[in-house]
Length: 74
Image (tube, rainbow, N blue to C red; front, side):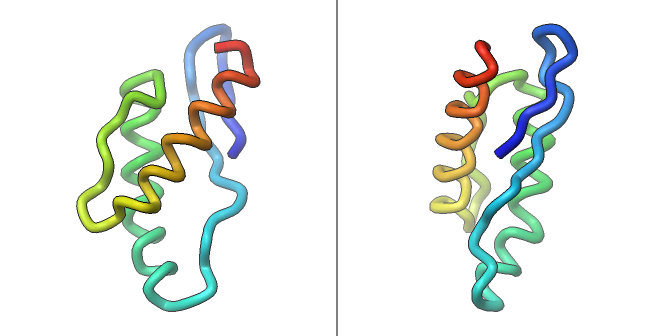
């Protein structure tokens, strides 16, 4: 995951790697990742809710986002 900051403000989140092997993974990610990105930017942190029906994806996203924010010194 790559985060973009303007000063200390989170301006973008790019998910670089995610499961896409089967149709179900693709379906979940197509709706969950945009919602998670929007929520993260709105919250300005990894303190966001999981997306209904995408619990594992959401959990992995939140952990990865927190790690990227930690690495960015945030």
